[in-house]
Length: 149
Image 1: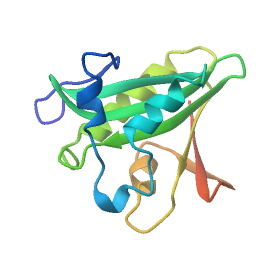
Image 2: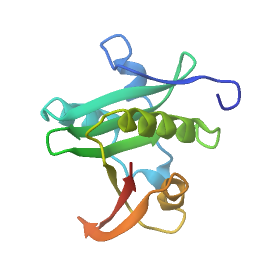
Image 3: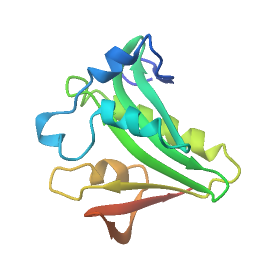
């Protein structure tokens, strides 16, 4: 636990949907990640989508969405956000560690991919701390990063 607060990933349901939709990134991050309403809508039309609210204790602090295609196998961190008021508290690091640990439990998982907007003060260094490295590929203007599992 970071800061004494247990971080968990909880299913988004009709009971907690509103609180997940109220989570927002900082204004200077809005161009880098879709808002949670768009992500949840996209997830409902993608058979490979898996999404959860990120909670510190009972408080929602973020959102994660992945694309899981275990038959390929392909594991892709599609969306990852921490609310602007919750950033800098270690919640993102703890949540990403949970996600990576979960993907590693899948015997077919060899690699976890993500896209990042590679700008100054962006998220690239955050992901590099977890072992993600650039693949050298750029797709839709975003750097593709990979974590070998």
